[in-house]
Length: 118
Length: 115
Image (cartoon, rainbow over all chains, first blue to last red):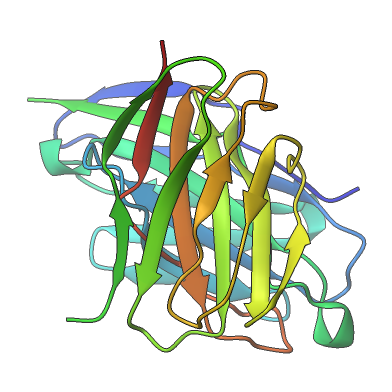
């Protein structure tokens, strides 16, 4: 079965500290996509990144970086020098199916609530 | 600006009543989705539609119904058969891609409370 696990339910850090959010996935597909979304207190999920299973290069975008390791089925997200505005719920997600079997659906993890304190 | 509009933002319902949550998009996306969010359970898919006049059940469709009469609209009805309807409901849309690379755009959500 396809599944996404975010074992960290809540994380609290002091501003300017680095923080890593873990994501582990299970899939029977050989080709798939992984995503990270941010949900601020307003409620709307905001897309952060999409990663193809063929591309294991790490990606950096400003203070955000992502580490994709196919060997351990993990797609971890690191925020460097965290800020209060980073406080939100973060979701990792996995695409279901590929090509003709693609349903368009995303399978979401349980989410990690990040609180950054001043 | 293109986006997804969900209404109402907050809704209170008495037990035994059906309620309909509205979702409208102007992104010209073919696919639309309804997810339910409960604390500690992430997002669970209720229904999705990849084309007008067609939709499929998600993982937790029991007690819900949808329609897709127009490309822009995908309303969700929470029926009295839904045993625990109090939750946060999120609507999303995306282009239809055969690769699975669909990036979902979400609305701001509707919070339903059953009294």
